[in-house]
Length: 85
Image (cartoon, rainbow, N blue to C red; front, side, top):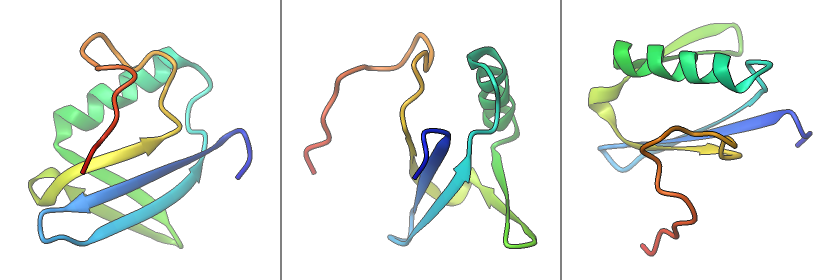
């Protein structure tokens, strides 16, 4: 994985998961924040992969893990946490 590589793991309510890797999408943190706001407003994630456009409605998602964590993830993010289970 290169420095500009990113990853996403989507955990669905049925217990399955989907792992996605992709290059950095935005050149700066402000653009990334705007993209995040748009995704949350739409309540759907769209992923272009392998020549297809995949739609992931949030109603089917338990949680998502994105890495690496952004330097400025927002004002409501708990930093330095550990998931215990």
